[in-house]
Length: 324
Ligand SMILES: Cc1ncc(COP(=O)(O)O)c(C=O)c1O
Image (cartoon, rainbow, N blue to C red; front, side):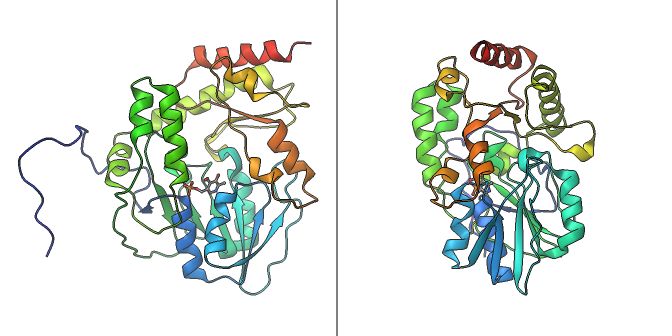
């Protein structure tokens, strides 16, 4: 028997209600790690191949399930430097880097079929292709406390209770303009995330149902082009976002020939993440290119909060820093 919902009394947060979702056919879980944890429990792999250029959060479900793994290298196109031949029970995780490797994912799918697990945490707008396992992470694209959509190769039914222990104070405080406090709360909320397989919180489901996804996609693409026009000649990575097949960008990935102090950007209220500090702390040799990416690649913000005036501020600030 389902529990009777409270009727009357004080109000909950006032948000529009709708069933709208960008991923209606996916399984809505609480985060990317929960999705991968579920995939691993289903597949019980002997071994996982994964890129060295990733964060340690991706390793957590592997460690939890005691699955052996091996890192592979990527080349300057952010594609596999060499494609390993997979033995029995082996699977390969590929990250659709910056949401811009959608064409390459098709090639990899042709090569590895169902042995490919797609990490779409940087490619929220990719839907399942019915061939691979794939998952994303809503927090990285929207102001929501949790959420990750899981696609399975065959239609499967999984039903988990929604996560109710989510940190959302940072979202409210940033909205209220309390930036330093919100940042501290954001760090705490991120640190509390686990691999536990739970459904997406009702708060995130509700907030995500209100997003104008078409407008978000368009804004990200436009902002990308503004950066590209300014930095194409300096960028050591060569990108294209001309058509749907080129994907929807996560950030504008600017790889310079030197390291820019993030502090000089923060002083101008420009916040650029480091992807991923973990590559410098693993104590494993042989991944110099990945470590160069961590040190020198600037992921420039281009999300739907911003338009040409803000993007131009970032461009001008960087150009001033780069001037000899
Ligand atoms: C490449 C990559 N994969 C997977 C994850 C895990 O996603 P989530 O934080 O939603 O568990 C992250 C981020 O933490 C990530 O950067």
